Image 1 (cartoon, one colour):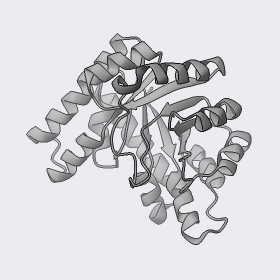
Image 2 (image 1 turned 90 degrees about the vertical axis):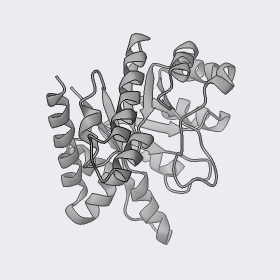
Image 3 (image 1 turned 30 degrees about the vertical axis):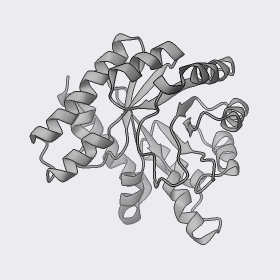
Image 4 (image 1 turned 60 degrees about the vertical axis):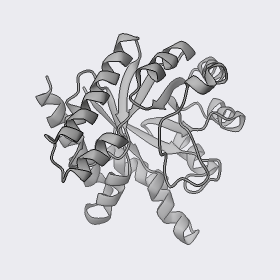
Length: 251
């Protein structure tokens, strides 16, 4: 059954806007869990712009849901992950000046280094995921370096969906969806788990949830945004319902 990982980074963004202690990401994780989240995702960035070290320690200690730690493949972050032992570590590219992650990890350009990082994480008992674009050479490289999970970047699909006025049948949207579908099939053929995420929301999620074999979607900004109006528990429950409806139609 398809699962939902809720990214709560932007709960911390709201806290950091006032440099105070609320809202608390741990409380957000509990509310998300009660709304039906199967996991919690946080990105501990080098600049600590939202989630910080204390957040990830408390999330590990105080919540009863699986933790996915997004991270750059640096010695510092690998050390933190090996000490923290999240259920999954997702390697992502990271730029100081980006608003959010803007593209997939270029595995081809750094295979040897990333293979060593994944081996170190695996020795600590951590499943490693890679966030990559829907490109077959990157998927094949992910298999070579030992990644267990590929999260396919759905940003291009989501942007096409928005540009087309939410017309899921437009040629541009269908073309991007086919790319994600093809990538997912390649991921599964190479024995890895097919996850997807980035810029998914309440309007565009169902076509992605319908794709064969997609195991988990990671969604954050849309859920946190809706929670301002309906509360986090309800926002998560609504997203989970849409995902499951979409997945059921894809069978």
